[in-house]
Image 1: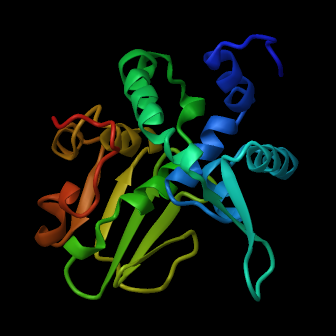
Image 2: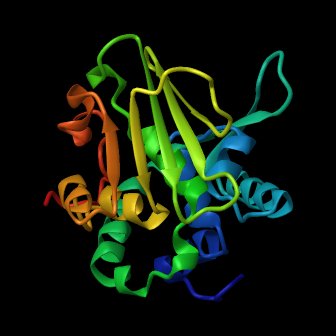
Length: 222
């Protein structure tokens, strides 16, 4: 894609304007460094397109592609050029919160994306004990309605198969419900009061959920 203009906006758009490019960089800047991690955050991207975009970004000096010693595959790390995009992406996200939320459809509420970012939102240091098991049951999903977040020390993992351990806190709701809470459109208290969310667990965990699972960086406190 070429615009044939020396305008810096045009040249930046030539590099960043292809489909998926900005979202790939979002994932890399949020900490994804492996191919499979990027696919998790971009569940609808094809492996061929992801490979092509990563190659282009490496050619433009936005990322570094490193072979992982003793392992198959590569890791993809942001360069300073990519890191300088972070405040721009934050401004873009703030703009999106102001002007695009009314255009969301049911199709946009992706459980894979939601769970990845809930995993990233866990503040393990604020959880009691060495291990915490969190279960989410999504009432609007027929296939794979149950998800678990397993926290052990500072390690936080997602599981779609019952880990067969005692669950410390249960969430039951729709994908949209917990997404709206995480995005700051509503609060846990309001969702519980209007019966769109059920939370069961010890009071230590249920009384202040944002203390150990933060909301989106673009969310405003309610």
